[in-house]
Length: 208
Image (cartoon, rainbow, N blue to C red; front, side):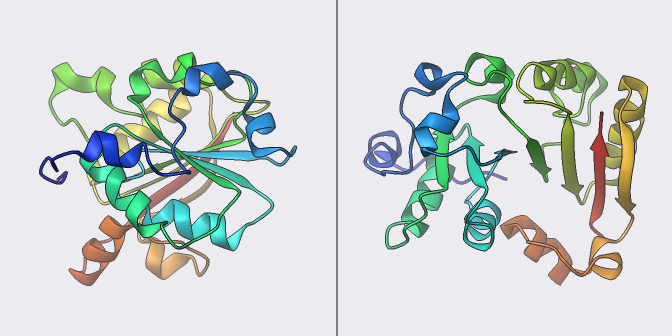
């Protein structure tokens, strides 16, 4: 569930030094934007930023980019960053449907955390693990494709496993209850809520 619209959110987020206002201009050259040759990890649907901020703090030698399509949501992330200096983090207000318009052969890893499951069959192509999106990702990965997905939605998880394997991905890790199986884990804001309610978190890591 996304936040209600916040008045002036669009203008406010553009004041943040973390926001890339014209990402298309950096297509194929995001390492220059970070001024280094470190790997670039991308979170699609970053929400209010808990995960990607924590990851950028934990791994200073990796560049992180978070994409979120709702102004009122990404605003919360920029507010959390007001007194934090993270040169390895950038945020983009963008719809992932057009992701190949802003990146080109430069992403090392994609995180898909608690994506919208789009449960109706007619909306299958909107799922971030559908073949249509996997094809889009082909255009932005630097070398081998590498995706890590976390979700609380069992049906989306099952769909994703089939979609990944049908597309040619090989499963590296899989968990039906992440918090019981894996010690090293950075939580999202949604994840904290679901775990507190006793819901299992599903995780899969795939490469192609």
